[in-house]
Amino acid sequence: MLVPTGVCLSESGLNAFGYRHQCTGILALSFEGTVVVAGTTYDFESGTSFDSGPGASNPTWWEQPDAYDTPLVAACCGPYDYDLNAAGQAEKTPYVNNCIADSVQQACIGMPAFIEKLAAELPPDTDHEELIQGQMAKMAEHIDTHTDECFWSLYEQAPGPSGAAWNELGGTTYAFCWTSNDCATVTLGASRIDDWTTVHDIPDPDPVPEWATCVNWDDNNTSVIPTASVAVPGYDAVASSSLAPGASLSLSSTFGTQGLTLDTTASAMTTATNSATTAMIVSQLNLIGATPTAGPSADPKPIYDSKLALDGPLEPLIFGTKWVVTPGDAVFIAAVHFDGGSRVVEMVNATRSSFWQTSTGWEFAPFELEYEDGAGIIWTLTIDDLRFTP
Image (cartoon, rainbow, N blue to C red; front, side, top):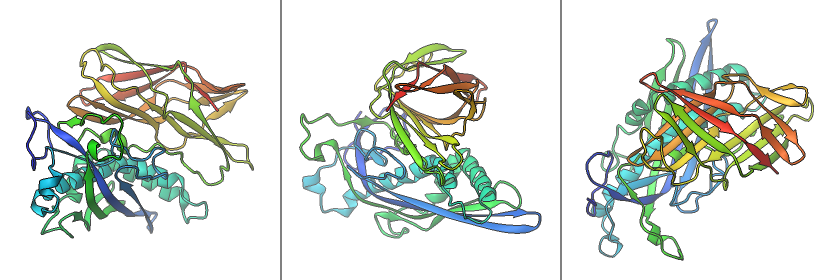
């Protein structure tokens, strides 16, 4: 059942659906923390912001501009009659509130990767650089395992009369500690929604596509995972390449095996070399899944969006003509949007992996990534015939 105008969804399972409304606005976050080592207190701070809406570009975090198909921020609501309701704040409020709630959720899902990237890009003259990077990694790990806590802390003050403005949420905080001495605070500087857009509002669509349906505000969780290359100081020779056709992924567990295909349009690998030391890192490795495709055989819901992105720079070891990654060193964020929900998890390389340079680019030996779910089931993603060309 389609929910009516003015009604928005936050949870699925209600035998109801809405339309996707892409939200236009801005979100700003700041991070600060303290760590005590041998009786000495060290402080660190950082922050970021991003714009959302049709065509909004955030090259620090994502290679592609924001788009209706994979929106950074979206509301899941009934249709909106712009002719009847264009001037009424009361009619707009449910859509704005749903947009703001989704922006906060997206911030909490994406924040671990944001923090990891900011830590890797710290200037080399930063005081106590390695110490701060280590604490930022622990901060990211804590948020990754406390996403709901993060959301409710930052969304504790609803938009409207109790907020900064009817279309803005700001000044809320999420404070936590991972030891008795090591603590951090995330502050939501502002989440402001200026407008929202349906597919029919995008200029000159030809042909006019159908409205995308949704069942909750989880449908766009895959979109917030960063795909931009990490700019590590000192690594100045950067080379990018694109995925070559033929790569295959196979997902297996105790439930069986299901093959997945790949869409190569946005998949990429970037390497960077330190010209002074000749050391090399992989600063970007993304695989964007074909949509839609079938899900695992035990749960064959259609998969609409899938993304596998390297979480932070990878420093392989060199042996002869091959670069080698030891088990546990390659951490990827795997994000999947399926019918009725989404999942964002970390997967690590369970096996030693290696890759080498060829006359046409880079080639990888088959390797496996693993994730253990809450029930103790090990999910294994086997990647084969992975090649990148300039």
